[in-house]
Image (cartoon, rainbow, N blue to C red; front, side):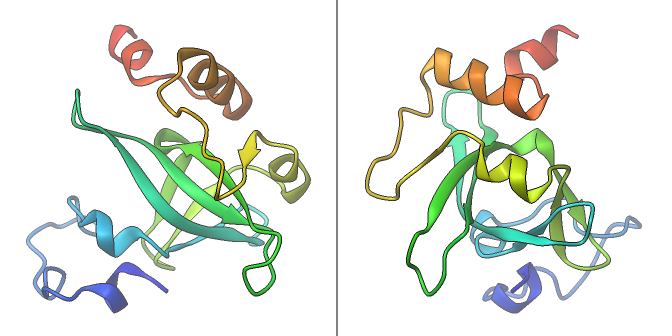
Length: 139
């Protein structure tokens, strides 16, 4: 699925930007979007978007990977900055192969980690080669 099929308010009918896609998007329309790697392999879909209410920034997308009919589903917090919007195919891209994603820090849907824990955040950004928001501001 993609954002246009979940546009219940018609916010994407009219475009006011000359870019390849909308600059501002509703979070609810992004949930369920497919995520592929650079080898064009389907590596899951976005289950949730985590917003830092203190700063107003999107910090993570929670990605589901490896389930069959909901069984064996593993969730991954992926730094938002690691995802790139593929406007042509209406999906997100993540520069990671399936094997590396399978070994990424993940969690069970019934046992979420503290996504605001500094150690968790640093480990996650190190794994994906990204920087936390505060570090990006200093650069």
